[in-house]
Image 1: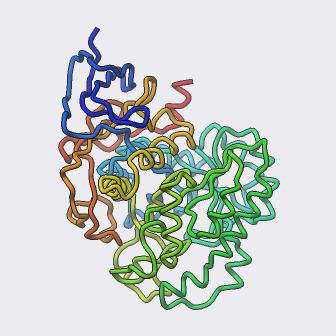
Image 2: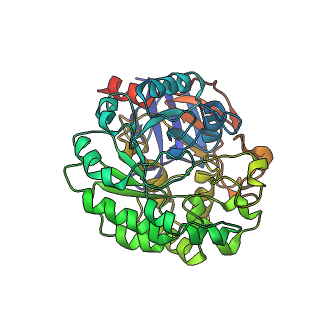
Length: 435
């Protein structure tokens, strides 16, 4: 019996590459065998066939800031970067803090996203009493313990109540871990990237993480510490329970105060870029499995905004398109292992968000990318698709996918997009269909 679609080549499965075929029907992987017949067959004999990536942390800026990014532009960038699914944060204008705003954002994204997507609901001091009613609709919850873009602060004192309210939730809780009182204590005018590191020191992050871990006892849904930035935090998180996960961004693990090659404002982000010893420890943690996933924290701003005086420039770095290609290149140079890259960018994000994606396994969505390891490219603005016309990774080498299949549909064909906005589906719709 022939499958609707068969992909054949060097397939990453069970932590190694094996020459075989992937059978796909109705957008689902239905067979992985040495030889398969298909109504349509693609052969990628000299390329890597790996699962598409998942980004658990993006800011696509809609509604309210579409001049910076939209679901259409951001998801197009994600697709070109080898991602089949993204999860959008709630600090938009207005923020995703009510059921109406949540449903409006979902409706809008369904018509404009190229990739599958999830939407997080912000938990604040004002709305924390009604968060359990969002359970059927949102993809997870976001807590901002310290002031950052959007000012959706959630007081640390509310953590016990929030954790108790959501203890039977199947949706993960994502936390921006910087202690508000600590940030206030260190506040001062910033003129440089070093100032930004000093005013938001590792101490503020570690204090927040310690409070979370002291309260995040079972039974709880999964709790995820976003964008860990310091070696002190790594030490504390080494003792975390299994239901607490943590992520690291490319900019915190690959960049440092010592290797800034562009305007310092390009590196302004919350939490801050830190000295090289922090970046080195974070990168080492990615290699050793001490971190659960890599997340982009894609936060685009217009170049004119980033080129202001440092204290006026907004915090945030774009990265949804460059994240996976950067690490695929590093793996090709054996700077890190391809097994860890796929675990951190594909398998673990799927596990954290509860999706049937992230690995080439029977029953999973056929989200698959084809990478030619011979076609190394330098990151150039002309080749990127976000509205942000800058990146701190300008000139870095990367491996972009030549082909992307999203639920079996050929979405990127020979580096060119071959699907339309609205191709993406809301992951909660798919979750309930599968159930």
